[in-house]
Image 1 (cartoon, rainbow, N blue to C red):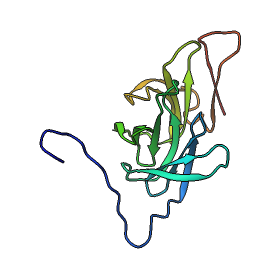
Image 2: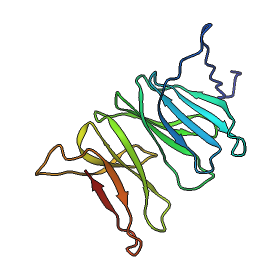
Image 3: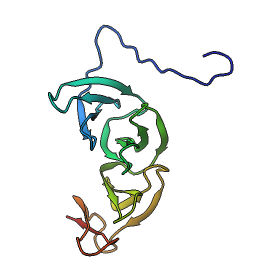
Image 4: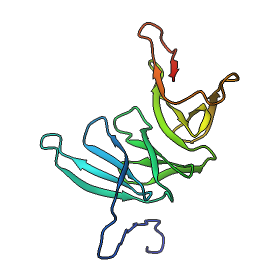
Length: 181
């Protein structure tokens, strides 16, 4: 780095054997040109995908988690803003820019997510993440600040969630239903 600039170029080095990259979760971008794989050693790999031939070329290795990656989700609606959110087994969450591979935000929560579902209100551009995991409620989070906006919980059955899906009825704008089982 030269005086007066703030350019930092990360370099990942390993010995004679490359990391195993045993995949724990996967995400394919909406344009189907970027595949993101999370692995059990906490790394995330960005792959360039040729939609015609399905040839995959590793593009970037993202490091920042210290535990296995549990889930990945998109964080933005606008195609030019390719952001994803990752969550690890130790409660670490990161928002990543898929264009340059930078971590834009990082937090460590006491909650461990096993599923993150993006939801966009009708006519809106803000994504909300509906998260479930090793805790008794559904956390609704902002994917850029990684703040918990609100929680959905049950007073009757504390361990009520084993699966989650967010539905939007076709005729009711702006409303959503959370189906859990």
